[in-house]
Image 1 (spheres, rainbow, N blue to C red):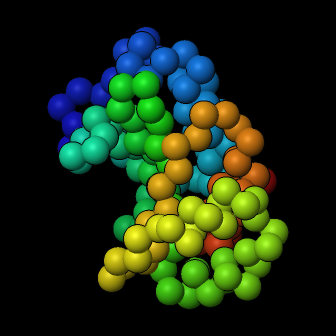
Image 2 (spheres, rainbow, N blue to C red):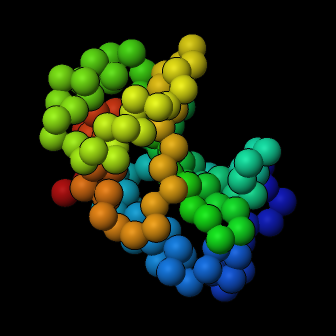
Length: 137
């Protein structure tokens, strides 16, 4: 767990105003689509902060922050990878490439994005839909 959760001003100064806007818009998009528990944590070796969306012991996705950088992680398990592969032509070239390059671990394929704008958000929501049906209207 994180000792102190960053405030809005602290996070905005840390990642920069434009990436803070991307962070907020992405959080708003996930929040309006899914009713989830949100947990702050340490970002491990590569990141300073982690903001994880979980429900029922399962993680939907996580946002990460480090200086001047924002990350968005989706892990696709075996069945979820099959769903993605069956529908991959409906995703942007960037998402297809990220999928192909992503490391596959025992628990799934870890797709880490570093969005600088909202252009991939429709694909992000589609990826999350593979993991879990939206539970908000």
